[in-house]
Length: 209
Length: 209
Image (cartoon, rainbow over all chains, first blue to last red; front, side, top):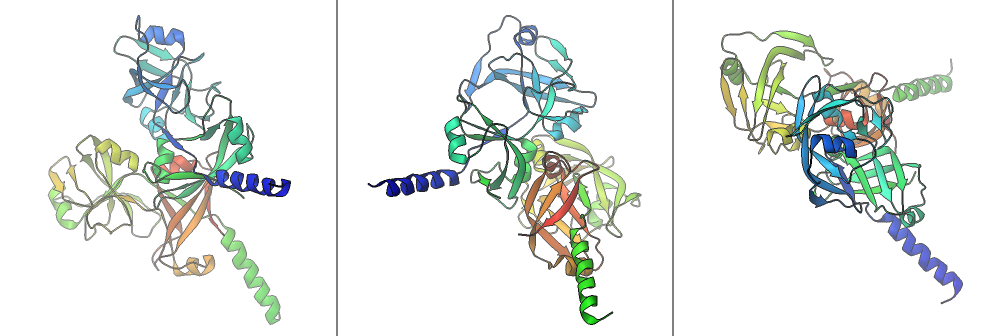
């Protein structure tokens, strides 16, 4: 095979890979805990792994808490493991309204100035001082995915969701590149409901503009 | 003014009108009732007008009911007036999940084969046999608006929502033209939350593709 043919072949393969659907991950309300807050809420208990998530090492834990806000409460909110350096509660705007908490739109870990919430486990209570956010939609990917999709960490892209009559295009989707991440679009339940994404036929693709 | 200048002037005015933001109406869960169901739930009581809506003759009534589904219930769901020929409950997909009702995505009035729900007023209960839907997003407009925007009744268009970092483009927005309607995009709370539309700076515009 000559050099030009090889180049064309590689380009065609890359073009085809770029068209592949991006796996969709719909994040229901959940929380992450630091070791200290976990020990307070679940004293003497190891974290139980209920279900592995697509992202390596990440899992839904057996443990759940009740979120208590000034206007309402939501039960059975699942802890995701492993433990982190700071506790963080990720809710939808529907949840924020039901709880009465002005949770801002933030990237995971960007918790400065965010409101708190009361967490209640079967064993203890905890007044979280801050850490309640609505997550910015984002795509996790490996450096190889980023190379194929021609994007870089920190970029924002537009993503089309197709699946039912609520088809739409999300602007301002953050790109997060990390060697230990798998390709996956993360949106919350409000976004999934608005896009008809909670549907086995739904898929996501990058929009080239 | 000669004919060409006049033509150019009119075209420029129309082009400018086409760029104007479309007023945004966010529909929270609500219901419409037929006269018979209203009389059953609120015996001997006239409908109270609480607040006029943008669409002529439409209003939020004083009356509210509780929706009771197999998995949960939602209180204080507002009746919209005037009464209609068929009862209809419009909820978000978040609500549908909380209630445990498989409400399909439908246009208002397209109720064939839709599920029912129990309605509870302070005076009576009613087992609605059908009429529970998630509303398809749509734009109400007058024939003049349709002329300006170059769309027809029954078209579907794409609409961009701008306002915060959740900016997006909704595909499949139905056009509904009627002489007694004012220009207004109707989306539900899930869609508003996903689009950052519950924000005083948010606005909608048609997308030309």
